[in-house]
Length: 96
Image 1 (tube, rainbow, N blue to C red):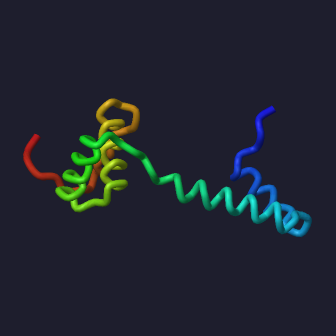
Image 2 (image 1 turned 90 degrees about the vertical axis):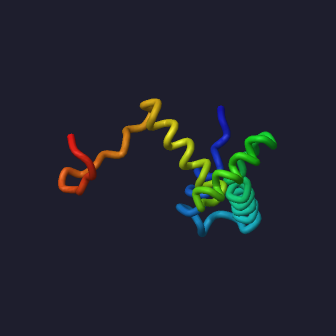
Image 3 (image 1 turned 30 degrees about the horizontal axis):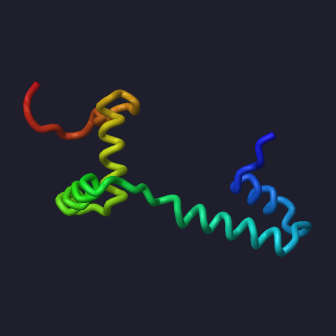
C-alpha cells in the first residue's frame, strides 16, 4: 500500500482541523514548505546553464520562465500540445 502524498495529508488535516494534533500539523506544514522550496529547482549541466543565462538575458525573462517557454515551444512543435490558435477577428499582417 502506497503512503499518501503531502497534498492528500494536508487536505485530510484541513477537513478535520479540530482533531489533528499540533505536532502532526507542524510535521505536515514543514514537509509542504520543503516541497515548495525545492519544487522550482531544475539543475542543468554547466554548458546548458550558461546557454539558459544567455537566452534569459536576450528574452528579458527569468531562468525559470525561459525554461517554461522552451519546453512549451518544443511541446507545441512536436504536437504534444495544441498550437496557440489565432482568433478569427484578429488583425494579421501579410497576404494569403
